[in-house]
Amino acid sequence: RFVPMPGSFEQPVALRYHGHQFQHYNPELGDGRGFLFAQLHDDRGRLLDLGTKGTGRTPWSRTADGRLTLKGGVREVLATSMLEALGVDTSKSLSLIETGEELERHDEPSPTRGSVLVRLSHSHVRIGTFQRLAYFHDTDNLSRLLDYSLGAYMPDVAMPGDNARAEKFLTAVAERVAATGANWIAAGFVHGVLNTHNINVTGESFDYGPWRFLPAYDPAFTAAYFDEHGLYAFGRQPDVLAWNLTRLAECLLPLGEQAGLEVALNSFWPAFQRSMWDAALRRLGLVSRGDAEDAELVVRVFAFLGQSQIGYEQFWFDWRGGMLSGDRATRSPVASAYSSEAFEPVRAALEPYAPAPSVNLEHPYFARKVPRTMLIDEMEALWAPIAEADDWTEFHRVLGEIEQMRQAYAGDAKSSARPAANS
Image (cartoon, rainbow, N blue to C red; front, side, top):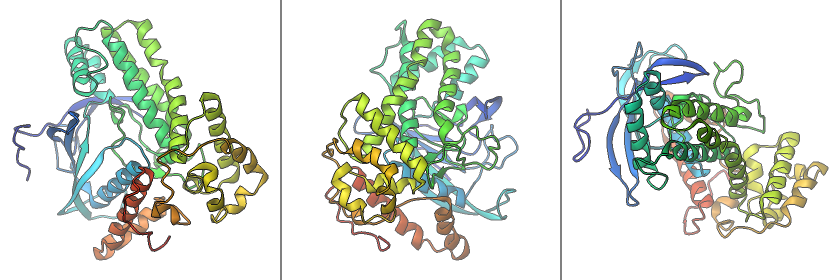
């Protein structure tokens, strides 16, 4: 049903890649239910990929039908919308199209409705793309892929022919992946399937299957029912990202020096630490006071979240602007937790912080008593009227709330959106 976009691909591209699935290597992977349809450039010169999900079988589908359930498409729209609102660098769900097909599935009621998702992203090159060429010892094409990635996504990092380009590339990827991982933690998000082929070189978060948001702080919280050992649990996500980057470093060994690649790889943890402080301050709408003070604030916040077990998103919402929201926090549904002895270290850490210019507390979103969340029961409640009566009213209302949240956290004070009915 797709026709070529003028100036882009004459036919869609389904890419082959390899990857570690739950840290077990699989050389039989690829775009099995979607393709790269077209590439564009935005007004800043960045490359944009238009891709599909659910468009049927490709040469890499193996035994699957290449289709996407409508519920799966709805879940991805909700994930990308929430993550964008919470400041995470994510792919964007451009459109969701119901196909009229009935799909058979083994892990949900069947038959179920089919759909096609069109996604907007900045990269289609995964760690697994490098792994495939390294697996075949195809150094020439590995070098071409490296040069393509630098030219397309990070031209300011290194030029083709730079003897240290592999090391500079790995450093840049590590920093971007670290930032995304930190933003997941700050958003209380669990991706669920952090295989190497689900990490791309721009660090952009994408491909949402069994994702979940945390109800309350719990490092052991998992998203996928099949993650029996908690490998991809909420608190283990940074470690998994570091493990995946190590696999990318191995791929780059033929193109760089081992010592330099080790230095580049080791840049991940300092970058993650700085990104974690930045992400927490961004969520709280506060101005940094320096590494030591920022680190202490973050440590105290997570200690309190672990001890109190209040709603994860509720905390960040209540204390937007730091002590500027002191009175607002007394009207929170969990205000009693803030008057407890356990909160005193957080209060003491917050007091010296100044609100950022983008704190935006006058936005209608912050007049709510509870923030917009997307826990698993809320997602299921949105799906029920769609499945039972093809009623999308609540789905669109919630998307409106999420957009209001995005504007509030983005510092957009011009929004005319009114507080939602349940605020």
